[in-house]
Length: 317
Image 1 (tube, rainbow, N blue to C red):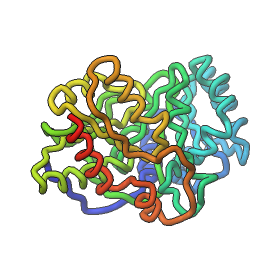
Image 2 (cartoon, one colour; image 1 turned 90 degrees about the vertical axis):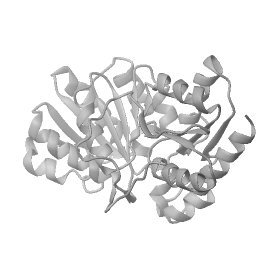
Image 3 (cartoon, rainbow, N blue to C red; image 1 turned 90 degrees about the horizontal axis):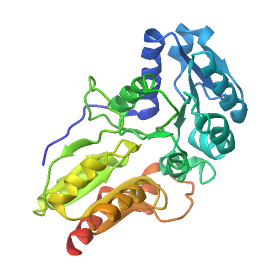
Image 4 (cartoon, rainbow, N blue to C red; image 1 turned 60 degrees about the vertical axis):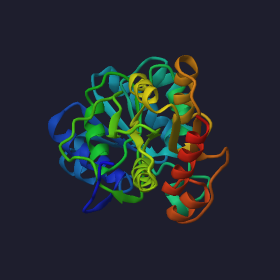
């Protein structure tokens, strides 16, 4: 098992802020928009250096999406930012009609996603956003795993032509990927090669998968761990190559079991190679108030749960 260590923990939303700051210096067409959540989205450095390229839309998310779509007509690259619940659930119609249908070059950047939003509770802990966004034709959907990867993804999507949904979060988590990495949209990242079970993880769950891999190794199980940071387009080649070796699958995501990464992997398997699959995800329910750690444990999104799922998958081979 390849060993991953870290010297600090940071929130992925700060990786987005750092990426925006760098983009502000590199690309004069990048424009930031926000729905009254500048501090939460870590946009202060970008705004300080580029006040003429920032639009405060206020608590008017639908209007922010419309303004973003309009900006693309003049060649700008708008980054529309707010909480994931507001960025998708509240404005799905505007995204569908004004962005996706007309293939506008809008980057929808969503923080505070999933259960790890914590004490804000079920109304804000959206667990359906990846599914909602991946169903839109032409929408690229990205869910990076740590600060460095979020920064790299933020910079990369500015060069991608077409609508993008970029998801990140509030809790501080280990920074374990390279600071100088090149982010490739649609290209899965091999975390650890293995032969007994394929663990496909996304977002905050990648670190949990790494911890699970170490626990499985201690029990003589060699897990292949792959970071699926791009939910759509999915790296089907990487999925099938891994499954050919291992013969069983675990998917791990901080999202509803229905409609997320697990379902995307299942579609690939049912068309190409039927193997046992186990889901580590929220089991078709809303969240609740609590600390991120408490909620991850209660809803079965920990390394321990990935270990148990891996064993079940192996037993079904």
